[in-house]
Amino acid sequence: MTAPLSIVIIEQEPERAQMIIDTMRQVDDYTLHVISDFRALRQKIAAFNPDVVLVDISSPSRDILEELTLASSPLERPVAMFVDQSDSSLTRQAVEAGVSAYVVDGLRSGRIRPVLDAAIARFHMFQRMRTELEATKQALEERKIIDRAKGILMRSRNIGEDDAYALLRKTAMDKGRRLSEVAESLVTAAELLS
Image (cartoon, rainbow, N blue to C red; front, top):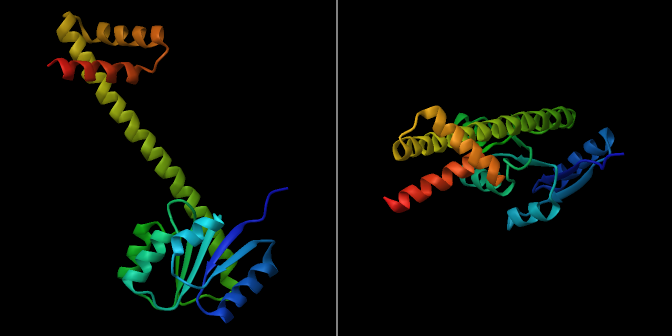
């Protein structure tokens, strides 16, 4: 049995907060927390460590939107934001900050669950893409270091590229280290000696 989804609801108006809670409780078993005061928002959200953050705000200014997105850590968890007014600049800012769902025209009870499901799915898709991108960047950086290390060995030992690579690889295996670690050590040592 899995734990119920933990959701932080950021809503300043008590009636709207209660409507959200009532709607959510009709749909599924959630652990719900309401934050109605924006002061120390980051700390309050962190204290609950929710699976999802749901923000309902009628007309966000850029400052409020920035504060909300920073405080709700949209890169760490899905954030669904409901606003009443359309503003392409604010929408772009929210999406660029990592908000998983930015819904204009306010919050309606029938839309909450599908929007949360979409926000969670979108967040996980972008999280996978970010992880893959980071792995690709790291692989490219390691490739550059290995190429630099091969160049150093080729010049210092007067050997070919294949032999330089084989020497790096053998050293890594003998030392029980990753090839990129050995290459980085060699490049660092060469920089210190030059």
